[in-house]
Image: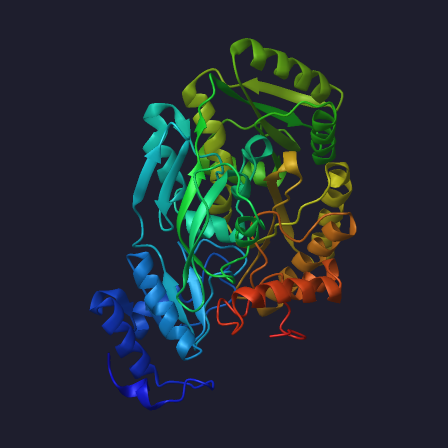
Length: 478
């Protein structure tokens, strides 16, 4: 290692010269393991949030847990902020760096380490993509349940950081319900194991604390996840409604009767038009809103479940009921939904919100969302996981127009406040990141926030791990 930092005291915060830090990190990871050229840093300046862009000090590309530990030990010694990064698909700014931070990107840690069918689990490195897990076990009749829309690109480490969900989380739960264990590197380079292949562990549920902590408690380098046997059959059905309110009310009644499909997805008319133009999925263009309801099981089970769902839909003015008749039709139905964010990006810039509300409040919050966006003079397309009340209004605007950008941001904040005021919360699966940190006080009291920050400080007393995220910058007890 270069001798530059050796003379510096380790008992006080120091700002090392950038060239010394980069040189030392190259000693740890090799030349190919560090990105420092300004042009090569550009891909790391933002994530899916795109509203904020900052070039990091450097990017580390480790291949092993030991290399992650070495980088964190070095950064901790000199109080250098660290930003963990997966694929950069975060929609809340969770992976946006600081100018004085080292980004630790885990994309090279992309190996599936172990597939254990007797125990129905797989152990993977954090850089493995979400979909790659299901692809690896599909031939044996298994799959990994959480399925974010970005599952082709997003990594399991990022999913753990944000406690990601997806369309099928209604039945199978979000990441925390499918996570058995992790290897976690702490701020000082220490490595701990939480959970494992066993279904439960004694003591405090630290695994539950880490899942959804947005990279503030440490860096997950390996994860053991639950594998689920593929059902006998699955059948998605399109329901077209005259109004968005009718579709939303139908969702509440379906769940209220005790019927739990594997997924209930919602699209309003603007979303239908956007997605159909891209995917040509056969969506009903005369509908004011549609639901994609998927059931699974034996043919008899699916028929019985759908009969009950169709009866409820008829009471809410359903106009179209279209059952998929083949694997190709089923894939087309889901292609439209999974492509919603990308399809919207073809026609406008957008902010994707992530509030969650009780199902009984869906109609009121949906109408309130339309009112808020209209008041700000903007447009909105709604596409979301209706079965668990996880709303994703896409606020359309021109990012190059400062006035429209400001109005879009304020409209998004108003929608999230509306969700909280109706008994919901600020995020269902995207995390708080930068986007929602100043709204945390709308949901939590100062006592609540202080307790959360005390827990965070127990893992990272120096506050070097993803330090500018989640908590309001004013009033931190770091």
